[in-house]
Figure 1 (cartoon, rainbow, N blue to C red):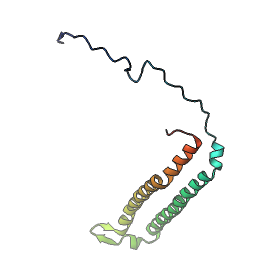
Figure 2 (figure 1 turned 60 degrees about the vertical axis):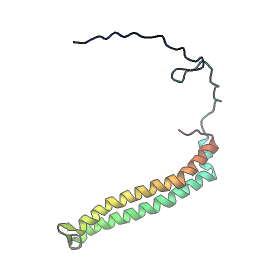
Figure 3 (figure 1 turned 90 degrees about the vertical axis):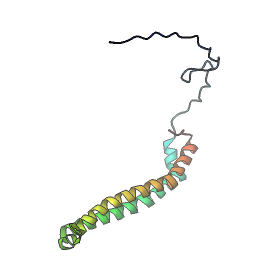
Figure 4 (figure 1 turned 135 degrees about the vertical axis):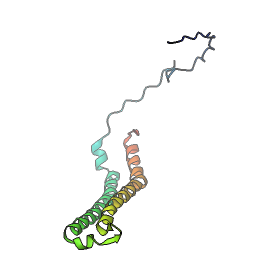
Length: 138
C-alpha cells in the first residue's frame, strides 16, 4: 500500500528579474545575420583545399598500398607456402597464426597512425578552410 506523506511547503524566495529558466530570459537575443550555404565550388577550387587533398593522399595511398601488399603476401604464403606457414614456433603456435595475428596488429597500428596524422596535420587545415569559408564548427 502506498503511504502519503504531507509536508509543509514554505514560501520561495523570488528569483532575480534577469534569471531565466532553461536558458530562456526576458531579453531578446540578437538575431544572427542570415547567411547562405557556403560556396562549395570556391572551396574545392581553393589552393588550401588542394593542399589538404594532397596531404591526405600522401598518407592514405602509400599506407593502403603497403597494407594491401602485406595482406597479399600473407594470403599467398598461406596458399603456396604451407610448409613455412605450418612451421611450429612455440607449442601449437605456428608461423601462419603469428602472421595472421599480425594482420590485426598492423590494422590497429595503421588506424592509430591515421588518427594522429589527421589530428595533427589535417584537422588544422580543415579548420582554416572552414574559417575562411565562414562555416561554423558543428
